[in-house]
Image (cartoon, rainbow over all chains, first blue to last red; front, top):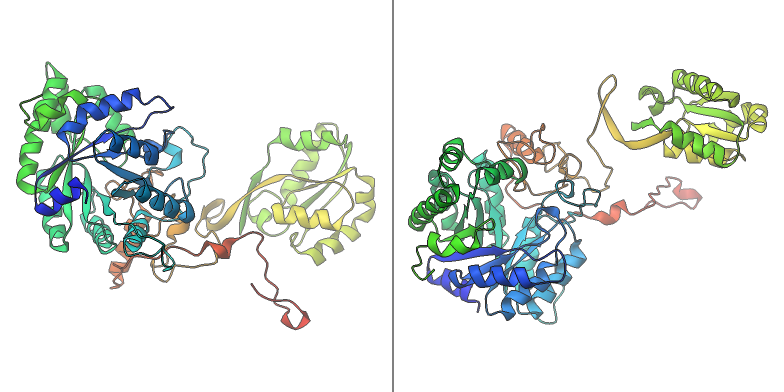
Length: 289
Length: 222
């Protein structure tokens, strides 16, 4: 069983991080990121053409992470593949030894570097999670028996701060019913909203891993507000970074406070370092780094 | 109705010049292209003037009653057979279905004068919105009469996606999220929709579409 899954099921507070596969075949910088962030994390998300921009596939990159001795969370978006390809890649992932899955919708191609691409969206993320769950039970999406089943820990994304909450909640409940066992959330700025989500979803037996974003500079904040889907940095937080003498230090202080708060509320934290990989240990309060 | 827009002028003239057409017959359409202000009598006469200004001879013009109707368009073509015979090419101000019907009805090379865009609702005069993609597997019973396949830019059945913010769409940022609208209307109607919608049957949309109601004469319905 995956160490990540074991820790979650034991009720340990888990830490996940994120690495992006390269645009190309040189894995040097990805390996460096894995070596920097990996030691602090139970598992590392490996993104799938993130932001609808071309990268080496999550499938191959996840295996690289695994071969380096770390545990990947294989991300699969519904944007680039139809139901045949998605199912085929799920089977491939399991045979490659990938045990953790994050099923997400994917950004629209119009927001990425190939704006003329056809967005596939043959399935949505809830349906994909349901299919992965079915494969765990030994069947494909049509109910046909597989010659060898999977046993993924199925995860999905959740957005505790995006209103209307009532609609977010219905969506999250549908995902939980589809077999999702953990949620990784978008960056949290309002701990009250995180609490609201945890209280509503924990009774369904799902774990909530709350997102923390390192707001390294005023420019990064502008980028997030302009480009990142489903996320706005609230003014009081943006101002704190903008007015700081050393914005990067202030971002680390802010993230450290957020992690401390999240420990009291959720089941884990998902760190998105936005390039400040070296700061991850400090944010988590690890003295060794 | 089928929404069309005028094709770029250079693409029209490039097409005509590719066969050295000096003389052109223009065919409009009395249905959708008339309502869309792209292929009615007014636009056909404007096209005639533009072609003549550019040095082409317009041998004649017509506005077919329903240009995508094969029988009617053949009849219309016969009425104008002399003018069509005099032309090197036929320029059609109708949707792609109309263009192909004309191409099947005349022996001259046929060129499209419009771009076909979508099946549109007429919101008010001159304002059209796409609400239906004619997918052949309708989910409007489950989605309070709001089509997520068409009006969600990602076509998600189970939404919203992670880009929704304050109820607004991530892709079309001036629009309310389709899934927010669906859930609100379901709630207003006292309907409960918390179950996951299953994956769609896309085989109903396989090309080319074909329906034949004349069962007794050997046709069958897909």
